[in-house]
Image 1 (cartoon, rainbow, N blue to C red):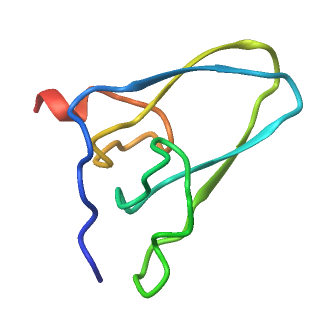
Image 2: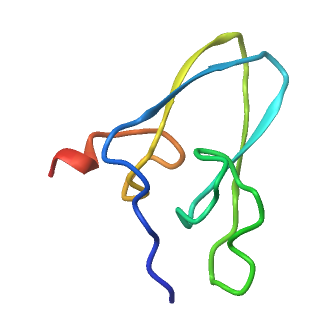
Length: 78
C-alpha cells in the first residue's frame, strides 16, 4: 500500500454546512486540502465522505495519520 503524504502538521479548520457532504483527502496529494481533488488516482487511497449533521466548525486532519478519520486527533504531535 502507498504511504500518505502529510501536507501540514495541524488540523484544517473548516466551517461546514448542515446536510452538505465533504470528501476528505486521505492521500495528502490534493491541491485542495483538506478535500479531495482526484490526485489519489493510481494509489491505494480513496476520499472519505463526511456529511455535516449541523452547521459547525470541524477540524479535519492535516497530517493524514489520525485514528479518527477524517478528524484531527492530535497524531501530528506524537
